[in-house]
Length: 339
Ligand SMILES: Nc1ncnc2c1ncn2[C@@H]1O[C@H](COP(=O)(O)OP(=O)(O)OP(=O)(O)O)[C@@H](O)[C@H]1O
Ligand SMILES: [Mg+2]
Image: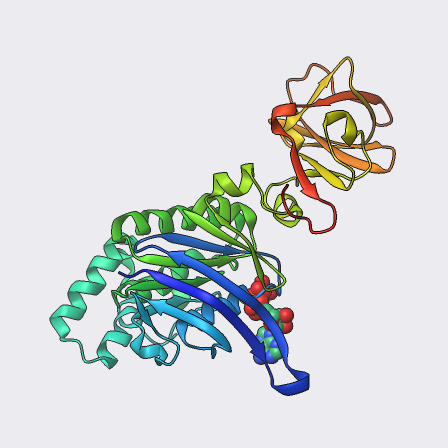
C-alpha cells in the first residue's frame, strides 16, 4: 500500500504552437489506503490524470509520487499498480481461473502461490463456483468481477479504476459499487476511481477530486463537497437536481452583495403561505418526493417537496417559497468562487 502525491501536475498534448494543455496544475495529497474518486464531465481530464499515475502518459510538468518516491520516469510495470478499465477485455478462450492467473504466470509466480491468490480473490468476489467457466458463459457483472479479480491477485500498492461500472445496467452498477466498497474495506488498498457519475462519486468516495476543464475545483469529503461547494461549477455538478443559483433574484434581501450569486439547494426551499411568489412550470414525481420546476422573473428554480405535501401543486399555479437562511451559499459572480 502507498500514499500518492500529485504536485502541480500539468499535461500538454502535442508540442509547440499546436500544443493543447488539458491539465492545468493538479495538486493532491492522498494517504495510504484512501479511496479517492476523480469526478467531472466528459473531457475534463480524468482519464488523462489516471493514465499519468499509471505511467501510460508522459507528465509534461510537475511530479507524481507513489509511496513517497517520484515515479515520473518509472515505467508502468515498475509502479506496482493494477488498473481496471471500462473495456476490460477478458481472454475468451481462457477459463475464469486462467484469466485471473495469467498475469501471475507471466510474472513466473510459483503455481501454488497463484492458486492461493486466485482462490482468495475468487472468494472475496464470490466467483468460486465459476472458476472453470469461459467468459462468454458469464453475465456482465460477473465478467466485471473477473476483471477486478485479475487486478486483485497482483496484490498491488495502488488500484486505478477508469469508469469500470459504466457498461453495467443500473441495478448491477449499484451492486458492484457495494462490492467495490467491501473490497476496499477488506484489502485497504489505495484506490483512484474515475467516474462522471456524481451519485457514484458521492457513494464511493472517502474524498473526491471534482474536475472541470482540466482544473481541480475541489478536493474534499462528499459532505464537504455537498455542503460547502468551492465553486458554482461544483455546486451545480454535485447534487441531483443541482443547486439553484440566483443571479438576479431577491438576493439583497438576504444580505447578498452586488455581484454575488445566491445558491440554495432544492431541499432547502420551504413551501408556505408567504415568501417568494414563483410560477410552477413542470412537476416531476419521483416516488418519495416531488421536484417542482418554477420560474421567478428571470430565474428558474427547482423546489424539492415531500410527496406527502397534502396536494400536488398544479402547473401554472403560484407557490410561495422561502429559503432556509442557514443554508444559503454565496459565490462571486465573476470567478464563480465561494465567498
Ligand atoms: N492524444 C490526445 N491528443 C490530444 N488531445 C487529447 C488526447 N487525449 C485526450 N485528449 C484531450 O484531453 C482532454 C481530456 O481527455 P480525457 O480522456 O482525460 O477526459 P475524461 O475526463 O476522461 O473524459 P470522459 O469522461 O469522456 O472519458 C479532452 O479534451 C481530450 O480531447
Ligand atoms: Mg475518460
